[in-house]
Image: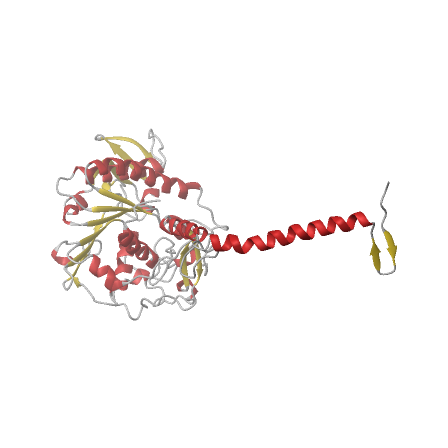
Length: 424
């Protein structure tokens, strides 16, 4: 027999059997409801809700993940973000130590937007530079920039950053006859010494062009012989920042074991053409091995990675220039081609050296600036700089304006010193 519902206006009438079912369900519901207080009383020692002052296990787990991500934050990968007010560390008027070659505003650069960007690492913040803190870290210490003029460019930036606290005494003439390239500063209140050790190839070099030395003349470089200009002094320093780059693109004849093995872009008969990365690799290998072999060298060594140039519409000697006024995003400009090759060559040599240095109690660290600076075609002097050694008909798209994006290198340096960060 089937039981059918009978529909009435606004009322639903069911057969009597469904009434019994409803009564049974109601009774069961009452039993469940009256048992809940008994369970709560029995379990009163454990609150079903978290205390306002107690973090739940889910919250604690999330914080642990966030702290782990903070610890692993990679400061060398990120983007440049607008910073309209700017760090305002210094200007070309407040810092008297900017050399003419990098004093872009003094020599007529019409825009200032290039100073209003800040490096934003992926997933964290890079702290602003604190000059007083830096000087305290280096109290009683010494720092050398070993390499070419871009290394000196970083030192000039640091001089201006520290000028907010104090100025150094220039003792360059007491240490070298060539004070254009070898600089030596002392912060007497902190017993802190800072210097440049000029060695653009890192290894020994000599002129090889019969027409004499010029900006693009042929050079001999001896890949297995360190430059005495730095080996004679480097043991006196507690921290050494090693860097080199653009000089390896000029015409070079390579020597190893006392004899020539080939050349790069030399156009000499019966000479094997060898890519610039070969000489670049061997030069860094020689530097790292030499530092490990010096009996009295106990310093911390930083490799500051390749600094890209940004010539557009031609090479440096064929009308190239760098007139952009804002950064690239990392979606617009990728690390690739010869810049990636130069970068990887350095990093591979450092990694090999780190393993060897660790066994000798030495500390070799990687300071990556290549990605960040690849995105800054707007940061160079272009035609807005002056130098007694530079033909002003050529744009300078190698060095960096002061103030400018190169100040970030010293923010990174300070951060690495404070956190003990060594590499990627």
